[in-house]
Image 1 (spheres, one colour):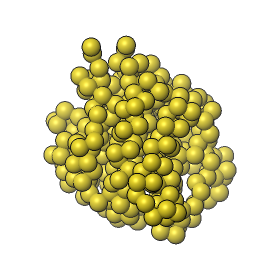
Image 2 (cartoon, rainbow, N blue to C red):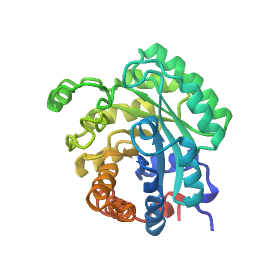
Image 3 (cartoon, helix red, strand yellow):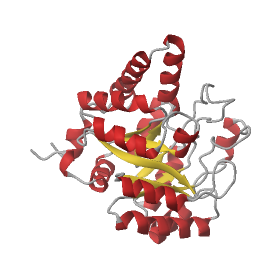
Length: 307
């Protein structure tokens, strides 16, 4: 029987995009979170990505991208999950240049199934140039590349303007014309866009706060889908209203990142009980709720495979 284990991640995402099936991507902020996520995905036969970003390593408890890779290999069921490097920034949250090439090269050497460059803090021309270079690296290794265009705010140091002001003014929204040119000139496989979504805070002072309940400008997203023609990615998926998410998937959002929500579930349970086992079970329960009730994608692995 043909399953997703036999299929490349690039093909899986193309099929999900065509069928309008969402693929959640769960950030592993703490290493013990990984096993219960995959066990729940396996039980529900739901395809998702497991991902790790530099803040998960530097600010939380993911330890290293190598450690995440090793844990994934111990726990992984490639019929329901693949491993993604999230946010290799050209310029980081503090506004400093970062060696994104070294991070992507390390992930590729470790066998990650996909990688992401984030040049969204650059001007358009520089972002195109950096992303084109990252695409060459990824494609030479036979894996797809994600990139970001527009400003998905929330990780920066310091307070954000009020959310309603950001949404009303379209501050940072990805421009459709830029999206078309960006995809054509870089060869990127998936495009992370800004259309009302925001990241959860990662600073020590704000990491425990409830995230703003964001929403999506679906009309703007439809223009981006038409312009880009590739699977679109929604960062900052935690806390977005369910109806917005379902509408976004219809308009081409294929990958939705979820980090803050499951990280806070783990951290709050660990703080309350002092037991890693209880915190892991809390994460498993949250993934089950997200799969069945929020995304509504139980059994999605078979649907993507065409069975």
